[in-house]
Length: 508
Image (cartoon, rainbow, N blue to C red; front, side, top):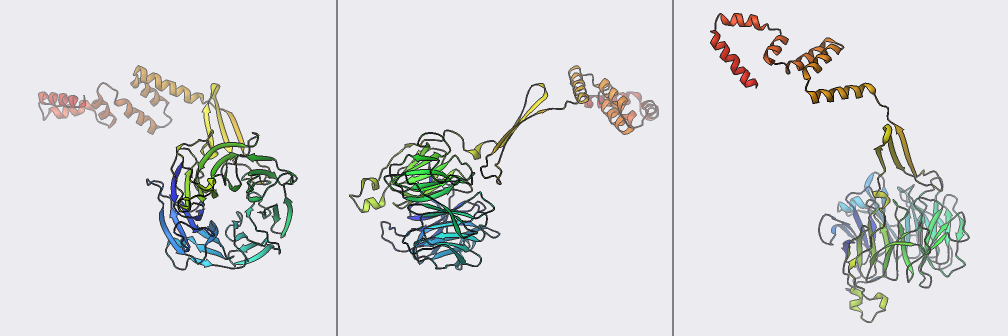
């Protein structure tokens, strides 16, 4: 279901999970024009405002840029929850912004803008284990640099004289001891050991004609990753295990034209997004054994190609897709109505290719067949027969294991029954049913371990006597006969009887 929308041709990035409220960074996309043929560029921050009706997002901050962006990423940095935003520009410049200063409307929000690449920067990723200071960037001429954000000094990982563009780079999110980076080129995917500054091996599919566009590491299994092909003849997604680099484990086939972007849900490895040149956004279960892959649902069918999709880190049920017709749309994974869209580029240039024409559709979207993992109960308990207590726990996987799996424990315990507690409970229940409160309190008095407890039960018992006033006065140390004799010396007996009768009536 579409929930929010930007009518701009932009590259977008979600705010980090520490940032609240959820925001989107939108940088004017390079090599794209809108219907107004504007050449200006900016970096904008929008809040979703999901509580507000309508598709509009609220602009929180904006800063102009002298270059347009091929890629935008937003990560944590230091103690500031807002983090930093990095944009890869068309001239090889990398622009690093302070999100906090940008939100505060500070003109000095641009921290640095190093220019080391010789061509457009289309690939960037933060190291998840060194997110505060390490950034990988890729551009033309096979250039891959590893940056220290604190010093802005890059380390060259790969550079050659070949005119081969780095299509995508992605840090491994599970291998803690080593810095492992995957970089995709049109004909291969190279896995790097960044610490040793050398490639480990190369993944190539010699059995099919592919043109790799993007790579995504498995969020739970550190040795597996998905590769997507943008070739229209082979619009496939392949799941590889780097321990067996000769051939893919499985192939996902569902798109009719080349795949442009994929994204793995960080909280549920059974959810993989893909968008392609057939204008469709599909959600897969890459871990299914179904032939050619299992498509869980078709999230959207748009008027133009979506060139990028990504999951929201803070709310894993939200997705953003950016398309070439000037739309950045936020979708909810939990179903709903597909909204009508328009094609501004198609309206300006009639007679375009059928795949680029507006395909306006409405209707009920397919919904997930099972609940995402973040909605499942992490634990629970229930009593069974014979004093048994059954508990279950869905524990997270061990991050130190390469082929880690979440553990699901079912624990059956015998509840220790206290016979004395049950006997006392049954005694109290019988007393409430028979209303023998006086005898119950007397028994408690006789069983009291100390004088203080005995006095408490004596006071409680007094309220159940026939003459409550007399019993309470006796507890307080007054003798009713002595008090009556003294009272008769000054007050007639008839008046005393009237007073006693009035107090009794008030008590009743």
